[in-house]
Length: 578
Image (cartoon, rainbow, N blue to C red; front, side, top):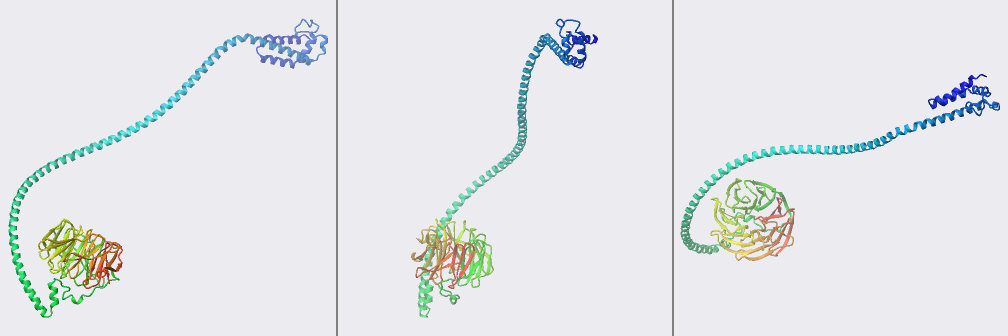
């Protein structure tokens, strides 16, 4: 074996120990040694004879003969160990040499890193605060934008309102100018009216003087008239004496009964109607149910001694019916208000209607035309009656506290009676000289038709009188009242002849009309419950109760022939009973 392998090994080890640049080169050299183990073993054997093993360093120690028995693998391992120790030592030396520089370099970097970290944290906090500030500013911006829009809309509304107010102000100025012009015109008119008032005042003073003179003249005329009346009374007394003498003569001729009826002023039946008169019967059956008027029927009556029924209602019409067949015979138009009461002249030629229009209307039955419109009342006319002896005289009562006497031939008022209590019902006496009136204060009063003086009065009821019905003989008058009672009074003495009332009988209105039968034996009165009660005058008790109406019954009337009985209610239904 030559020395070259050993020299190569020494160089390799020196290279690894002093000339290597990195740990990776050392590892690479170790792999070369492992791959050349055969070479190392041969080198060690060749060098063992050159020097002492103790004086040579381990890597360069010459192998002894005792060591030749070591296998090549152990030599390789030993060499590797020495190489690794050398490498470790070199690494420690280099690390010790480089430590101060590393520490010097790492200190500023560490201190700078902490400062940078602190600065980064501060910047991050500032960034977060900026984000928060930006969020708050964004919210404020949104709120301010919304407020700006709202203010803009409000500004537009106020500008619109200002424009409207300017327009209204312009209109108001125009209106003010117009009103100012009107005011000036009214002032001029007022001045004119004041001047006219002064003129009228002067005329009134002149008229007052003339009225005073006229009153003086009227007093003279009244005195003359009273003198004339006294002369007439003397002539009338003479005529009465002659009349009594004539009656005596008539008694002698067998006409005593007729003469007595004429003296008493009672004509029970006319010669034309005598054959049709019969005693009244108590009705029990509804013969006809007639839908007569719309809105109610306030007044019904029969023609004198006839079966023809006349009714008036709120529909402003007068209708005439055939009571035997229930058919409509005639309709009268021209009334300007609701019909509150009806009357017919004793000759059956004219119908008079009291109206809520403050007027009375007079129709001619034959022609069906309005003959007169009687004006003079200042409130609704609620009662009317015609004289039983003359076809010319009519009396009416209204809610203006007046009773007026009318001349149908002339068509105007001949006398006016004024009283403090309104009159709800009235009727003529059989002689045509006295007016019976029933008032709201419950009193029954008698008036002289010629002078308008109050003859007598009586407190008939505690509440308002609603109806008056004179008996056929003219001696008794039936009064009905809101106190739900019906009284009979002797018209000559105003004494009560009988009182009729019953449980359930209630007067329906201030103009509910009751009636006496033609034979003066029965009383019929309607009630608010739709019933009709019939009393016997002699028995003073109810003899029949008729039920057919479904509304309050406002009026009843009996035919002069004795039957039928007719009734009308608040819904405009008229029923005839037999």
